[in-house]
Amino acid sequence: MTPNEEKALAAHAAGLNCAQSVVTTYAGALNFDEDLAERISTGFGGGMGRLQETCGAVTGGFMIVSIVNSQRYPDIVERKNKTYAMVQDFNRRFAAIHGTNNCRQLLGCDLNTEEGRDDYKQRNLSESVCNRCIADAVRIVDELIK
Image 1: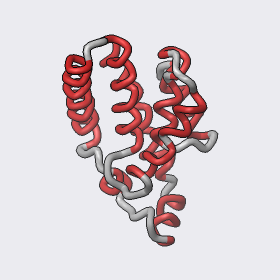
Image 2 (image 1 turned 45 degrees about the horizontal axis):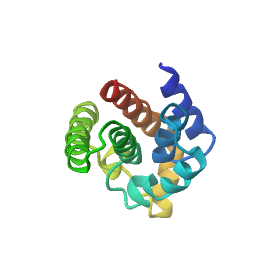
Image 3 (image 1 turned 30 degrees about the vertical axis):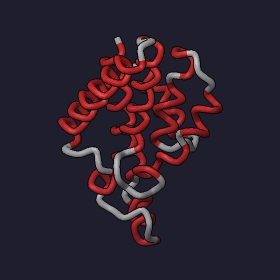
């Protein structure tokens, strides 16, 4: 496991959601405010506000790709095009590993019901699914931003 994966998983164990765990991992290396990053990414957990759409680890990865490209490319059109291409590549890689980027499909339960949240806890999905998604998202980001 890489240092970035370890850092992201430690953040998740400390209570950050999947998106926050990915985004805050890169604050120091990419020179952005960790507290602000944590606050901005709050609504992306649970597949974006517990809508269980795109996995928070994935959206966290998208945010990091955006930050990296905003630092690399001063031209807004080039920055946007490079970011879109990198986001698409990230998404392909993540889906190749997990079969989907959809939080509901990844977890197999509905976090918006008490029964679903109980199932999430009983099956320890935070560790068995979310931690894998976080670690894979960080690894993919690391590969893409080299």
